[in-house]
Amino acid sequence: MKKLLLILAAIVLLIVVGVGIFIATFDADRYRPQLVSQLEKAIGKPVKLERISLGWRGGVAVQLRGLAIYEDQAALHEPLIAIDSASAVVRLLPLLHKDVQISSVLLDHPHIHVSRDAQGVVTLTGLEAAASPAAASGQQAKVGKSAITFNIGSLKIASGTLHWTDAMASPPTDLSVQQVDVLLKNISLTQPIDIQARAALFSDEQNVRLVGRLQLPTTTHPAALDAVRLETDLSRLGAEKAASSLPSWQTLGLKSAPTGKLLVTIDHCVLDASGLAKLEVAIHLTDAKLAPAQLGGPIEHLTVEALAKPGHIDLTRGTADVAGGSITTTGTIDHLDTTPQMALQINLKELKLESLLPTPESNEPHLRGTLSGSFQGTGRGIAWPQLSQTLSGTGRLTLKDGAIVNLNILREVFQKLSIIPGVMKKLEARLPPEYQAKFQANNTVFLPIDAPMRVEGGALRFEQLPIGTDAFRLNGTGSIGFDGSLAMQWMLSIEPVLSDALIKSVKELQYLANTSGELEMPLVIQGQAPRVAVLPDLNYVSSRLIVPAAEDLLSKFLEKSLKKNAPSEPVPQPQ
Image 1 (cartoon, one colour):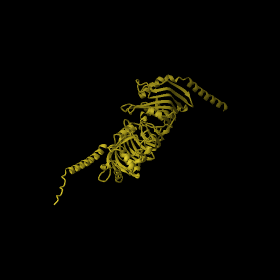
Image 2 (image 1 turned 90 degrees about the vertical axis):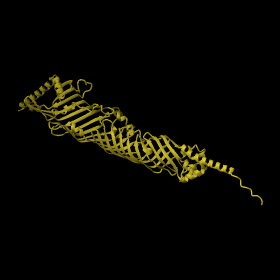
Image 3 (image 1 turned 180 degrees about the horizontal axis):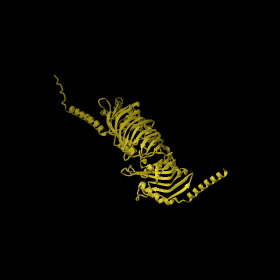
């Protein structure tokens, strides 16, 4: 028995040595031209293959080096698919039963180029061949009259690159996803295949994770994806790399890289033309932070819930903390491939203007207060420079605890009444102290403001904008541009008690009083914030002052003339 075992062991050893010698001496590369020819016939594209070799790694290992698939002979500058090396380990014993069991397939450093031209045609050739039924695990092929079964245990992609170019996007996009690692286990035609993947997006390190299930295509149904989850941390995205790959990123005007957690999910997607046209992708952004250059402070705790379909996004809800208050929005976005068209409903709640607006220089006039409001309308574009010029709609704004800091409107008005000589000196000398304080104040403090508005042409436009203070009220129309421009036309009405004190100090002002005893005059506030000018209508003031003064002079002149020309009364004669 012992001798028999030794003989069997020797036979096994000889077989192993024989297989080893066969693998070491067999020139598999001589079959490379035939394999390339068969591949080109199968996919209808030019194929290049540098070398085929055999080895042993727990089974017969077949290795392909320098595999590349091209769009056509005229486009050999960048392949659709390029793989440094592809290897498959085949279990030896099942081969005796015509069962090709591939324990593992490794694709090392594959490079896949996916493109879309200006007409919207996506070039994805090669992936279809890789995922075709003939290449699937569990399939049977015939060699002569015998059926051979193919089974694949796992497929691994290591250090891959996905290159996406889009000539239809505006501006065109050139994006590369690096360090792509993919693992598919228990590959089967009848059961979903678990997918695990990691990749580096705008980063030198892997920062994107994907899991899901893949159903391979068969003769009866196309391929499909289920339960797909893609996750990334925005803080791990490189802003500089993103800006170089996506020109539209630069137009966002961010002062620093964004942060937040992004989750993208797909419940089910059939991987054919009909299924992709119905693709729905759920987008969940949580606890994000953005720092737009146009705002004085960051947008924090940004949360977005959206559902994306081809060319369309339903914004279910978006919330954020901004300038000590909050913003909520809902809406839709269409025409994603060209110039996005938005329809939005936005609500603002208690935003602090001093935190919302850019920080002013010392002593420069600026707004202060708590802003709330609503807006419903449309706009085109994603970046603020374009969106601000195309926003159109209606809404309402309210301002509490409002003030213009470092600008006293009342003082500015009377300082410019040059038609009344020395008006400010007279007021400073004659006004009671409690009224002088209103001219000496550094700020103009407003009563609560509530006004409807229109948004168009890059500005907020007000048909009626009533503003009140404890000393006067303003009523009129005007616009406030998103670029900081200001153009307001108001009627200034000073409250009666203060008007009376002003008239007593400067009697010429009586001609500016209305029937209610209020001094009133038109004025314009215009300029580019923070450099704004308060300009009373001097033509109006002149007309109100000159006409009554002329009437007084004429009346006195006529009265004097009548007295001069009147006959003297006869002197009584003595009796």
